[in-house]
Image (cartoon, rainbow, N blue to C red):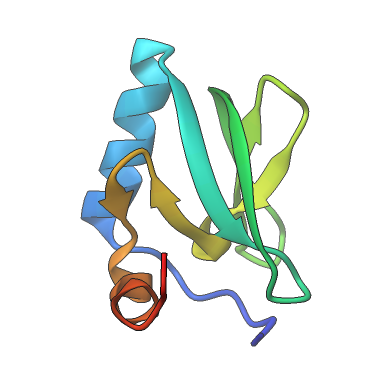
Length: 90
């Protein structure tokens, strides 16, 4: 997986913020640094941006996930990963 941060779409960011504002427990699918598909279920507590302009979501369960590695939240696919799900078996 490319480790360079790739900004997510404004629409997808708005969806993440909407879930955070509502305090909804969400299921997030994301890719690890080893390109493993992982999942985490929790409430979005905060967003942070590093000095290198990488954006992360902080979850109530302690997970910290880089936004460009999120493939799906609930039933919404990150537009950067549409082809990933078209070509998967699941």
